[in-house]
Image (cartoon, rainbow, N blue to C red):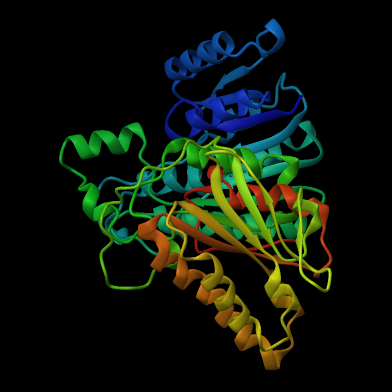
Length: 412
């Protein structure tokens, strides 16, 4: 049984992630400073989820992660840990310029958002199993500055860089960082109800036209904290409805298309040669695989297209456009996932064409978002199918990644 330590577990994304992990049969070590909410969650998990008639032995630890001494004390009595999800974080609500921030408030935010993940790893390093997964929760605010929020954007930018440096310094660990977009937590619902947040303005720069549900972020965290995410170690995953790739001036209207439940099974079509995903195959006259379909009634409509891998250098932008024209006209909500050659393997003369193909993926995400159509790309090392990629591709293509669009993921 995997054991996952989850910080900020008692509310919002953390609470949704605790439920997601527990439903997957993984033991949770829940950490939060809110003792009452934490123990209520622990009781609910132990009562509601009883695989084979026995409650999972979830644990709870009350701690203020801005205090290094309390972080150090967490190691006492913990079982071996297969994963750590550093989800705890805070923002600044003072609405003051950075130079006018009170020093105590500035430092407390940095202590939790930026320093606590590193301190926690040092404190718990001796409890980690071999190839343990470390997942840090940053924010889209770490990619684009948000003014009047104190150290929030700097702290999240720092966490992204720290995570990538950690992956380089400790290759024995599997390290990744998640950048969520705007999530409709209980806190956000309260802001909307009180009139302090206009949901129409909130979605105006989100191509999918809606806020994320907490469970959608929880699905991404559970995936990154699993062995299935081994090939994206060291990478960043932006689950933000496409807001991080949108640069236009238009305003998106709220979507009228309801998302599918996260556990909706795949109705998957594979176009091109990638037999690790095939169950049935259609071939042309030269015995080359054209496509393969796994039929699931009322499943989530997903296409994985491997044809760009076979395009010549300098022809990948055209091949990406051709794949989009093949699959982008579908009316139902769903996804197109393209397999692209790794950018690092491209010679300088054709690097511009490859970069243009990746920007086309982002552009299409912005254009398709109002129809709830998603498009992402995954870089692969070669055109030869790697079975280890299958879990990643199924996640990106499927309903658990419905808030992921416009991204190019780099696989090892």
